[in-house]
Image (cartoon, rainbow, N blue to C red; front, side, top):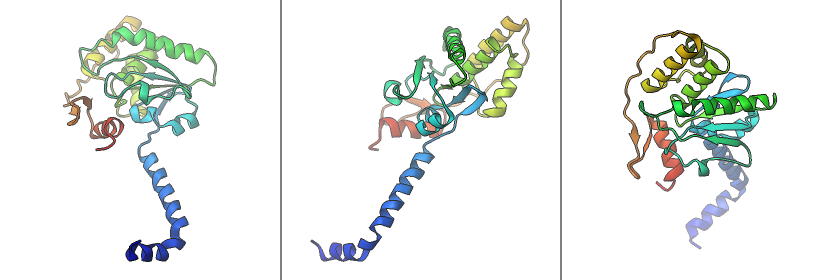
Length: 226
């Protein structure tokens, strides 16, 4: 053994337990950095992004039982889920203005409502990748269809508890149509969201979302060695 290594081991052998404890603390801090509390809309309905959906300890703590996943190809659904802990309902929808999210709104809302009717112990998380467009669209539609909110009322509630809410303009038009269908008129003007450039992974070429954090999550999940 090298004399330098031997000297190091002798000098620090008494500090092994403290170092191990510090490593445990660093691991805990790291897991907390990569965790996110979903936003509570009403007592049984929550919204978040992919980070929230993978924050298992938080989800268990707040009592989430069911998860509606609206991710397309940003993350692999099957290897990002925990079927032994939660029940999943998956819908693959891209976050594009021309994506046909209207085709899954009724099914997604019916699923949430059916879970709610199973008992007061049931809680649902609705998530997409960023937690701002697809998931927000489904939650707003649920409040309109099942709770009879106007779009304006639903928007104010969701924005209050989940400020990053911002469905894309195509989804906004669908929500306006739904508002008019249910209430006979449109309750608010849609504020056009600014077109943002998608972050693209330089390793695989996939779109990873709109923020730097979404790109970071993609790299951690699919390219952990880089």
